[in-house]
Length: 114
Image (cartoon, rainbow, N blue to C red; front, side, top):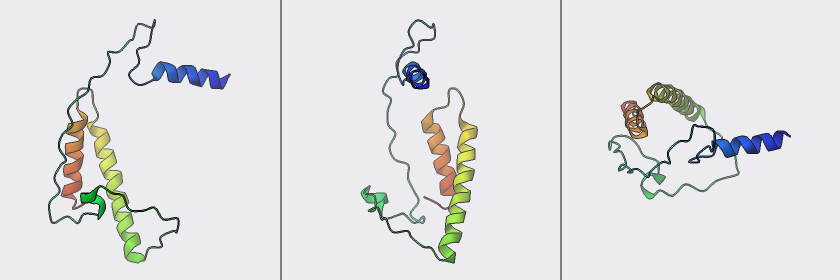
């Protein structure tokens, strides 16, 4: 059945698991170092949760934006798309996720965003 096939496929692809008997066993990952947070210049506005780490409460009421809010959302979306495209160009064998994070962070900062 398709469910059994999906289960078998997931078992073969499970993160950090060696594929037995297929000749392509990968070594287990080892814990790396977590880099300190990257800095954000003081001139870039920060959301209220940036320092506390506490997310704002979720509201079930839709938020209706005015023209300025809509334009700001468009600008943020365009920047997000550019950043995502840029990050994709950095993904190559041997490139660390940290170096990608630093490059993407710098692009966002260069665009005056957080």
